[in-house]
Amino acid sequence: MVNMNRLDTAKRSQIVRCLVEGCSIRSTVRMTGASKNTVAKLLVELGAVCTKYMDDNMRALTCQRIQVDEIWQFVFAKQKNVKAKHFEDGKRAGDVWTWIAIDAETKLVPSFMIGQRDPETARVFMEDLAGRLANRVQLTSDGLKAYLTAVKAAFGNDIDYAMLIKVYADTSEGQKRYSPADCIGCKKETIKGRPDPEHISTSYVERQNLTLRMHNRRLTRLTNAFSKKVENHLASLAIHYMHYNFVRIHSSLRVTPAMAAGVTARLWSVEDLVRLLP
Image 1: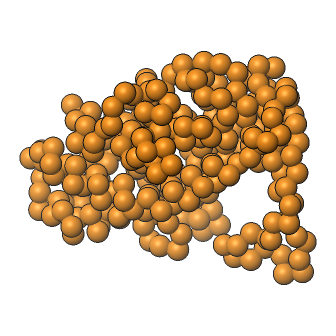
Image 2: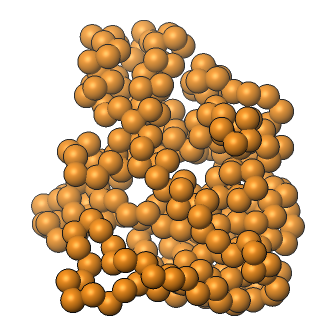
């Protein structure tokens, strides 16, 4: 097995490539020859520097149309199976939600956050997003009521905001496991300002949710690859979005989202990403 202290850039890059392509830690161990502890240590350390880099550089963005959404996952155990022992030594367990914002034009993800699906997390998320924007934007969210007060607190009146509220069929079977009820329509509701009706949509952020589940093993449904620690979960998301924004060329843009948004002028490689490590 390879020791973390002896990893060169090439070996670190090999490990990161596995992780951002949806491989679990154990499969990464088998493919790279690195130990499980080595992979986990690299995950946490690289996740921290990726978080800081994006926090420092995702500023004064000139986005025009932002879409936001939330995606569910759990840490250690699903909420209904959480027991008191799961919280020993300050650990967290149960449901977590990843809040995601995406620029509909450049496909940049300027802000993401993990927490509960509640008004407090919504407020912090919206304030973080507002602090990264240089101009007035059009914002679209789903019908989650927590957004109403959160958007008002973060943006005031300086926003064009609309909700896209999905209408679901009321069937006798109700919602099936892992499958929502059939969507039979959408209602566009203007909340503040004058949002363009043609651009009231959450299609891009919902497609981004699929990208996240496909390329981050911890969010793959019905597997045992879920995060056991919330810190590792956050680190994996930071690496995913750093790779998504700076390294992965978007097929329709033919550049990375960070290049399209003017955050960087060059195409990054995985090696560039791991060189952020001290």
